[in-house]
Image 1 (tube, rainbow, N blue to C red):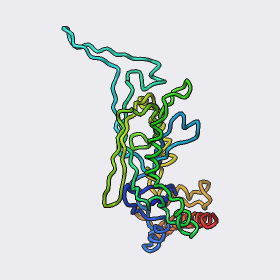
Image 2: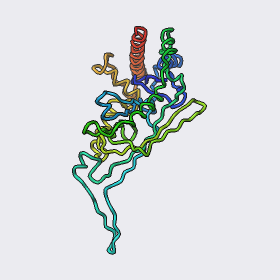
Image 3: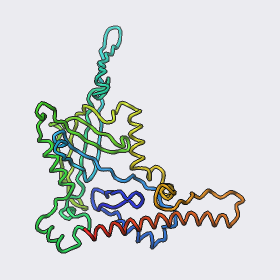
Length: 320
């Protein structure tokens, strides 16, 4: 089931098997039951999911791509350098075959083309996973549509499209037709690989477990260049900061701090509430109570925002 992150409202996938994460409505009901809206929110253990994308030069012209339903299971890099070692009578000699053009337009001055091994995964491909959202089957008309035109589970459809991608030619007229993979990880919060999947390194495995059926496929890409360049610390640092600022701020700063930030006047439509400062050692009981009330007001404002967003989403669903 695709769930909405309570704090960022971004879509977040569950595990590759049975999806046990709660829906947004269930989270709100659970919070009401436990009266947790007025307590500090727990820090998330992972940032909202940013899906990986596979495409090619040809598909970019056609505005086609494969947004992966489940991000790759493993990604491993093999880095070789353009350096040869020769044993001589006088000692070991190293020859460096650097190229300034490759520094900007290739993998690096002294790096050979990296080989990146990727294990893709479909997640659960049981037929019921064609409809992971309950609202997709909440009317008779939608059920009738599902009977006459069943949906292929998104993860399995990713695999089908990947097989088609590999069957494209190497040229578009006189231009090379290159494969492109954009993915997000802890090491590279956002990076695009441009190269070609190697023909001798394609394999896939079907698995059946207690949680359902899955398919995993492996491919190796010979990378001609990356965006940003993997050999530039400054560009990687800038990409990291930009991605975390746009997507992972809650994970980095904590949900409670972000709730304070979003409730500051000028940041959102909610009236500004100054963040409570820690009580001094000799602070009076009344001031401590006032500080506690301020924290409760901030949490209540965040709760109100959440309810308004839910009401808006439900109105859009009912109107569609």
